[in-house]
Amino acid sequence: DQQVKQNSPSLSVQEGRISILNCDYTNSMFDYFLWYKKYPAEGPTFLISISSIKDKNEDGRFTVFLNKSAKHLSLHIVPSQPGDSAVYFCAASVGNNDMRFGAGTRLTVKP
Amino acid sequence: NAGVTQTPKFRILKIGQSMTLQCTQDMNHNYMYWYRQDPGMGLKLIYYSVGAGITDKGEVPNGYNVSRSTTEDFPLRLELAAPSQTSVYFCASWTGGRVSYNEQFFGPGTRLTVL
Image (tube, rainbow over all chains, first blue to last red; front, side):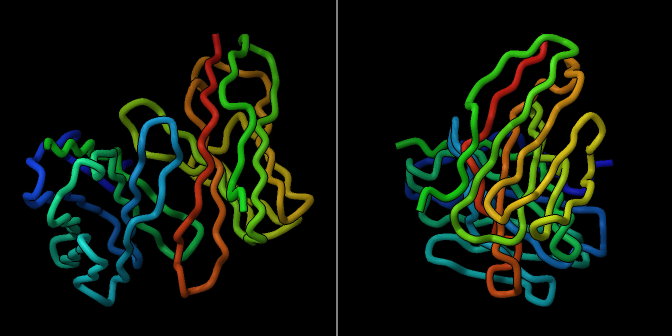
C-alpha cells in the first residue's frame, strides 16, 4: 500500500534549466509534505516543506507546489545546477509520527 | 555538533545471527526514528520514539526491537537475522514542535547484508 508515489525514477535536465519533480499521494489525511535530498552514501537531508493549508512555498531556487484536489505536489528547481544532482524523496505525514516516503527520483543536471 | 551518528557503516550477518545497530544524536532531540530503505523503494519506518522510555511501532516493525533509555541513544536490535532484512538502515531525529515540522535529521546509514 504505497500512499506516496513518485512515478518518475529518473530525470535529466540541462544546467540552468528548470527541474520539475512530481509526487502523488492517496491519503487525504496527510497534512504536511516534505522533500528530502539524498547524495550517495549519505543520509537524506531536508530540503523544503509545505503545510496542507498552503499551495506554494518558496525557498531560494526551490519551490514546492501543492494541489490538494489532485493529491499532487511538485518540486521546482530554478535554475538547476550540477550540484543538485541527487535522489529526491517526497514525504507526507499525518501528524508527526507517521511519515511516508516515495521511492525517489534521481535527478541528473548536466553541465 | 556531530548530528546523528550510526555504527557500524557496513555489516554482513549470517542467517539467525543477532546484532544491534547503534544510533546517537547530540542535538537533544526528543523524537528519534529508525527507517529501512530497500533498493528502488522509499524509506519505511520501523520504530520511533517520542522521548526517553517511550517507543512505538512504525510501518514495518516485525523482526526488530528498540529501546530508548537516554535522550541521545536509540539502538535497533535485530534478532534472528533473515535475508529479508538486507537493507540500508537510517536513524533520524527531530526536535519536535511546529516550527520545523517533521524536518528530520538523518544519520549516514548502515548497510546490512544477511546471507
